[in-house]
Image 1 (cartoon, rainbow, N blue to C red):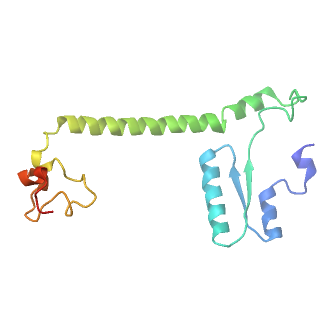
Image 2 (cartoon, rainbow, N blue to C red; image 1 turned 45 degrees about the vertical axis):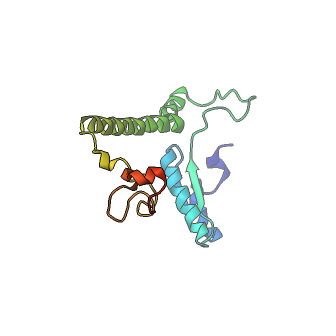
Image 3 (cartoon, rainbow, N blue to C red; image 1 turned 60 degrees about the horizontal axis):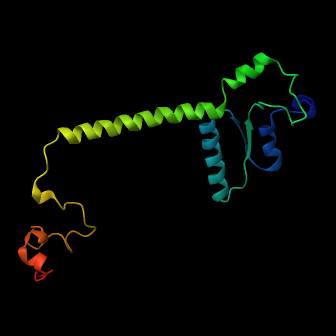
Length: 156
């Protein structure tokens, strides 16, 4: 049965206040918008403010079951929604993000390749979690540069 014939108000999200909760409508064909709305609904619930009625309108691409050949819907309508397939759209968006990441990494590699080699004194910089406790001596020099360090006789 058509949704329009089965309810007094086809906009389900508007029924939320009747049950003491906000109602939110979101384009269910936009994965990132659905995520945003869901995150806010979850945050609201975790703050102890109760549930949120979220209506995500999507398009059913196939019949209701294997027995439903889905011959009643117009082919142009199906094609229109297929062009907005949320999985395909998200894959495309992820490819764009991956391209930006690849470009950033490539740019960083080019910068590193073009940069001069660091001095030997920088060899252990940012290697130890507590450089003052192990890697750098009281005089500010690296303790591993002290010949006594490798002999095991250095004062640590």
